[in-house]
Image (cartoon, rainbow, N blue to C red):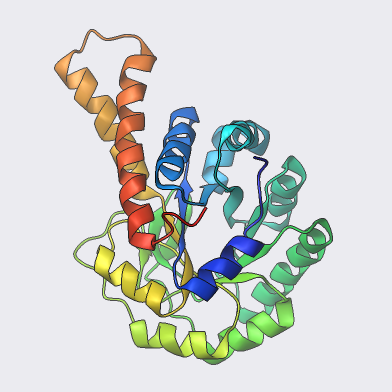
Length: 282
């Protein structure tokens, strides 16, 4: 089927108390792995790319990969820009055909975040493409994204932000972090519950690689509709490649080691689809 947007998917997820996994993809094999996992578990799925990924190969390359996979798939597939770092990049992804756009103004002050988010919403909504924003700051470092120590989302500010921007979904900061965790993250579940009381649109959890599955499930119970995974997919793929090259350093055909990396990513994604509870929802 053709690529879809998150709008109807999130409506069903909110109504029925599950979330949809959003998986960062870096190459064709990762795209294939994510779709294969979603098809096997009959789950809708979101694939996404970060600004640094789009520096490596621009939006048209990744869009083509995911659009091809979606056309052959029997489950709904969304193509999402993760952590759009500027108005210009958001528009570029929109024009390339992405069916969901994130603009991340969380590194700016509140009023500036509202202004840039509104500007992206005004471009995307006439094309029926939903927009995700972030309020508060998810900490840690991944790619060119440096959230530092982070900063929690204030529930009352979240309500004002959503009302003034008309954004479609909101990434909230409740203690998760990007990149590899040192220790176990402590999530402010009560803060999430307060945000949910004041904000009706779908909520998004970033920085979830390394977060215990039970904690993710509890966040979903409290209103999270989209769960992002990035770092652990990269680790899984790299482990597969290293495994092959370690056992046979003379291997020179990329298909040999990329296939094992693909299998590792598929297994990881299947596990997280089950955690999100989206299996059987396609």
